[in-house]
Each structure stands twice: as structure tokens, then as C-alpha cells.
Amino acid sequence: MNEKHLDSPAYRNGRDLPEIDCVLIGVNSAKTLGRCIESIRSGSYPPEKLRICYADGGSTDESIAVARRYDGVRVLALTPEYPTPGLGRNAGWRSGSAPLVQFLDSDTIVDPEWFGKAVGRMRDARFGAVIGFRRELHPERSIYNWIGDLEWNGPVGESDCFGGDVLLRREALETTGGYDETLVGGEDPELSRRVIRAGWKIERIDAVMTRHDLAMTTLKQYLKRAYRSGYGFAAVRAREARLGSPFWKADFRKIAIKGGGFIAAESLATVTLLSARPSVTSMLTATALCLAGVPLLFSPRLFKVGKFMQENQLSRKEAKIYAWHCSAVVLPQLAGVIRFHAGALLNRPLKNKKSALKTGLSNPAA
Image 1 (cartoon, helix red, strand yellow):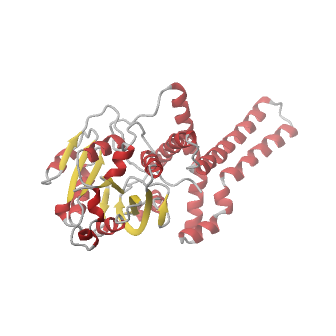
Image 2 (cartoon, rainbow, N blue to C red):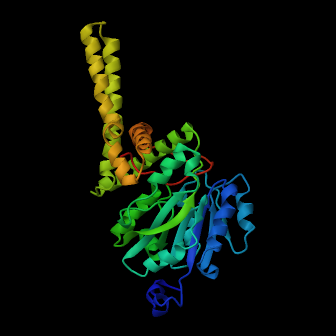
Image 3 (cartoon, rainbow, N blue to C red):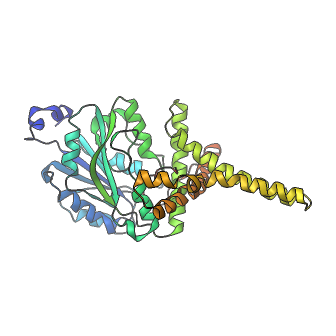
């Protein structure tokens, strides 16, 4: 089977369908991996056309054993010192030969109708990748899951990037060389940009692609994810800037101005109070500096509640909660941005430890 098969009369008439390599990645994913594999096989797409590969990034639990319980699942037991999503995804797609490759995180469930709908869109040779909607399984279990459900998706139509769940042409992977294996965050948008520069388009269709279990219940998890998303923003933006691309320029600027401006204003206020003799003037100056940073950081909460209500179909209460998130998230994201640039300067990039990987970036703060 080759790429030309996608344009054959038999395929267009529905009498024949292309094979798909389904590449699952994970580390310590025993609790969710079986569910993911079963969702692939239980859908409407002919199971004999689906080739499943699980690329394990060095699990210490029963992930590999779980994958091997399923007949026909190819298991790649990788043992990298520093695992990254790109390592697993590249190993997976390179081990197969199907003209289409579906990448999935092991904590997702594939919608039963996804493959048929996505393959149908791939009839158009202009598209190198097709994506749909990722929805959270349990948005009601925590505010963090609920925010994730809001932020996974973009509008239907041509898109400027994809996330961890995507159907790609093998030809696009071969042309671009696949994922960057050094990135600990932002590897999906980074590859997206290279796919587009190679001449293909990325399309989001009006269909559910996967259901995902973010399983985020603590503030610590939320802050860590925001920190890593900031790191990913900076890493990808640095590469795009060198190429003269505007991708993520506005989003990166928001993090720098809102987060950096707030920190600078509050720091100056503190320095003013500590370095000057107590006086009305020093108190007024410090207060003015302190207040100057507030509109920068809290502009979504102050000015954008109505916009969030309209754009996301939220109640006023929900829009206020989301606005607080959009205001505060830039601070841990800014820490991630600083970490990237410090690591680039000192040649000490951020590296993953051998622990469970949660891939994918949330959308930037509005």
C-alpha cells in the first residue's frame, strides 16, 4: 500500500480503505493503556486495517505487560535516559508502513467513528494532517479538568498546528523527519509548522477525535503543567522566530508582558519600600507601582468575562472562573519561559525524568 492508494477509485467509492498505523506512547500507563487499545479496535473502522504499536518510554509499572496481552499489538520497549514524546512517536511510526499514522497518548479513548471521518477528509491530497476534538472524560471532577476541556480545541477548518492526537500522512513524516526528540514540550506544534512549510495543510474537522483523562486534581499538578507549557511556548517560539515566522508571537508576548510586567512592578514596589526611608512619598510610589501591575496580570478577569461567556458558551460564574485562570496562569508559564532561556544560555535544557508523561499544551492565556 502506498500514498497513491488514497486517491484510488475504490477508496473514493468506499470499497477499500487504507491501513492506519496507530502509535500509542506512554510511561507508567498501565491504568489507561488497555482502554485505549480496546477503543481503537471496537470502532467502526475495519480492525484488520489498523496496526497498533505501543512505544513505552521506560515504564516501571505493568504497562508493557498490559500491551502484550493484546494479540497483534507491536510493543517497543524503549529505555531512554531522558524520555520525550518525540522519541516514542518516532520509534512507533518508523516501525510501521501504513500510508496513514494516527498518534495517540495512552490516556485517550478513540471515538468509534473517528477513523472513518478522518480518512474521508484525507481524500484531499492537500491535507498532511487531520485533527478533531479532544474532550475530557471527567470535566466535572475538578476545575483543572474543566479548564482542560475548554482549552484542548480550536475552531473547525484550517489549523496552524495540532496536538498529541493527530492523523498524519506517512509521506509528511518522512519528508519532515518526524518529531524533534529533544523537546520535552511543544513537540507537536513544532512538527506542525514543519509539515505546513513542506507544503501541506492541517485541517480540524467537526468530529470528536478522542476522549482524554487529564486526571488533574491538585494545584501542584496545575502549576507544573503551566510551567511546562511555558517552557514549550518558549522553545517553539525561539525556533519559529529564527525562521521569521509569527507563530505564537502574540501568545508569547502575552506571557512576557502580563507575567513579566506584573513581576517587575511588584519587585520595584518592594525595592522602593525597602531602599527608601519611610515617608509618604515612598509609600505612594510603592503603592502606584504595585497597582500598575494589577491591570496587566488581571486583564482577563477585569475586562474579558463577557467575551468568554460569548465565545465559550459559559455562564457568568463559569466565565469568571476561567478569567481567573487566564489571569494567573501566565506566572507559572513565565517561569517556564525563563527556564528555557536560562537553559539555552547555560546549555542545560529541561529534561524529563522517568515518570508518567502528560503530553500536550493547553492554549495560551487569553
